[in-house]
Image 1 (tube, helix red, strand yellow):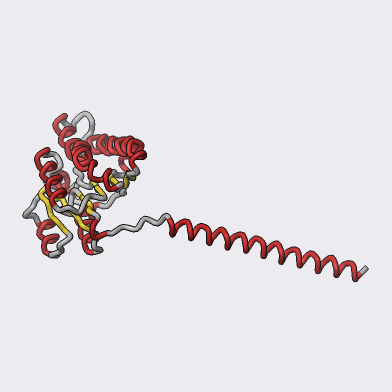
Image 2 (image 1 turned 90 degrees about the horizontal axis):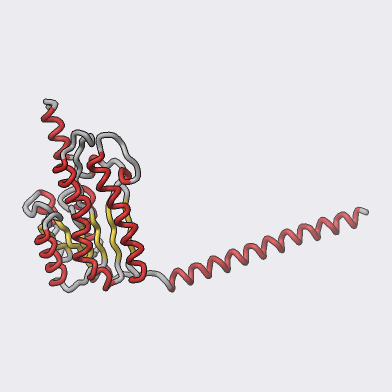
Length: 250
């Protein structure tokens, strides 16, 4: 009886070891297959020849993205509202041949057309667009003026549309990508923010539509939704100053 028990125990242990070996072998084979597939399909960029166009590079996200991508070797076209402003001077001070600082008011058709001509003249092509420029206006629906809604929309919504419509042919040619910077405030609503909310909700659906339209061309379209980064962006600075002035805060 004892011999039968030990034989059964040995058989069971061997079965467990065999099963473990089979599972381990299958797992390792699957891992190798995934690695080979990833290596074969890996997107390798010749970064020095791939241009990236970024709006809103005076401060915040745009400034740091332009700076770091240029330092990494990418060709960067950094759009700034104030060509003699602090951010523009800091970028030029890097003295990088791959970094082009361009005057760009995204509400100006002529500025956007000139930016297109600048990109084309450099012969690098354009692999990516980052629509980062943004502007914020506080105000309840009842008290915010139509002009305030229009002003915010010109920067946050029509600005990206201008950039996309003008530069998209270059990105389509390179099968690159478009990144629109929205906000978590484009996903929900809160009182006193309707002017800003409406533009960011619009950017969300604009991005979704563009993504579907660009699938057949191999162009990737993504949206970035930052949270509250007051210290990293100046999009609320004019409104803070206005608020402090109205309520006589030092």
